[in-house]
Amino acid sequence: MDVSFEEFLRNARNGAFDAFGATFSWAGGATDDTGRPASLSTLLRPVEPYNRWSFLAPIIGAAGAAAMIALCGVAIAAFAVMMAALALIWFLLSEVFGYELALNPDARF
Image (cartoon, rainbow, N blue to C red; front, side):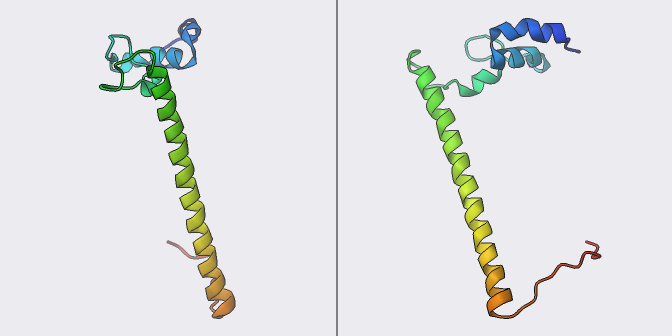
């Protein structure tokens, strides 16, 4: 099933996430728990039992998005610490202990 550009623009008035999700939700015909077509904004809606109070749902969704961003920051920080440790190992081996670490550009892996 092809999606025309006009149909995409027609759905754009529902908001960026809803337009993208509504345009491409034809693949599975999936719906969320309220019967609406599934969209990308359903990723930020809380599930049972956290969606009991409708006025708290946006706050819970925002807290979930903030937690995902914070955890991505933790992963990036862990990667930076790992790279610093590798740089320290390289420094110790090459400068302190005198090993020469070189890569052969003609090597075939």
